[in-house]
Amino acid sequence: MPKFRALELAIEQATRQRDEQARRHAQAQRALEYGQGQLGQLQNYSADTDARWIGGHSVNLSVELIKHHYQFMDRLQNAVTLQQGVIANLERQRMAAHQMLLQAEYRLAGFKQVIKSRRAALDGVQQRREQRATDEFAAMRHTMARALLTTEEIL
Image 1 (spheres, rainbow, N blue to C red):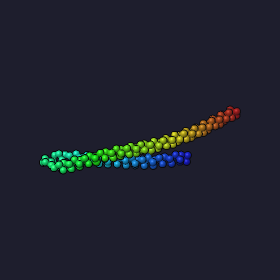
Image 2 (image 1 turned 90 degrees about the horizontal axis):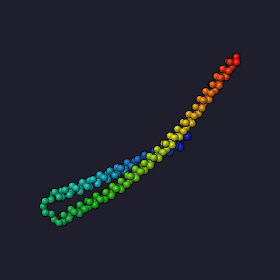
Image 3 (image 1 turned 135 degrees about the vertical axis):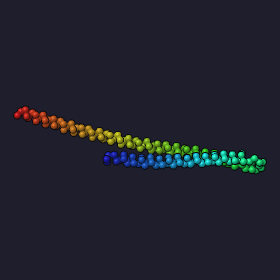
């Protein structure tokens, strides 16, 4: 209907925006999962390295080798800490994308509700017109029937 064309265009635009926000949210979710996977790999590597170091060296080690190991483990722990910061940032981005998606969903739902209520109002007007026409037709038939009866009674 031409009456609802503007609303239908608004719904189409809101749908496109919602779909774009859903794509961004999914992308942010994937980035977060990837970052969490990297963190898991770093933590597993750190734990494996410590386990190998502790269990694999029963002989006397030089001070330099021990120092090197501790420096390496410190850098590895620093990488874990940095990755945790990255994950916190990715989580904030995912939450922001989620909020934008919700806003787009609410906007779209609002437009759909407006068009639904306007169509219902238009349907109500149409039903009242049809009822009025039916009532007028019935009244006219009743008047004609009474007139016919009156004419027959006179004759």
